[in-house]
Length: 115
Image 1: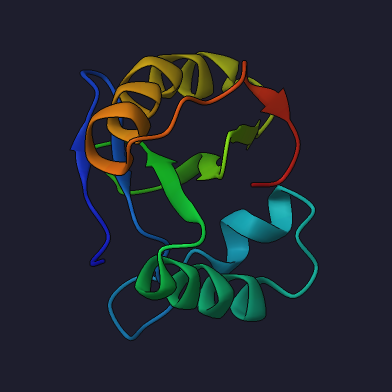
Image 2: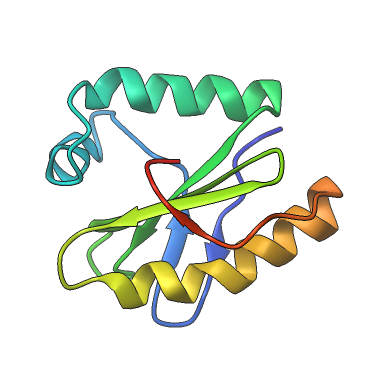
């Protein structure tokens, strides 16, 4: 499956990136992900294999990643940068509906951990 972008009002959800136009590596380091480039490569592979679906929760005007949310099986997990819990909270409903409608999954309540 190709990554699906989602607009959730004040926030924009997209696949993680690390290319010549945009890199989420600095933001992931702020989220305490040590090997950010490998993490991004893993999420790309997981989208393709349909085993895990991870979105960067971004500020729409800048594309800056302030949170991550993801689904693997029935687990809904996410983390956020300091001061951006609202971004993660806003993503829960739309991603829960995506999991149900597009993936046929029922997810548990959000767990605060790296997706």
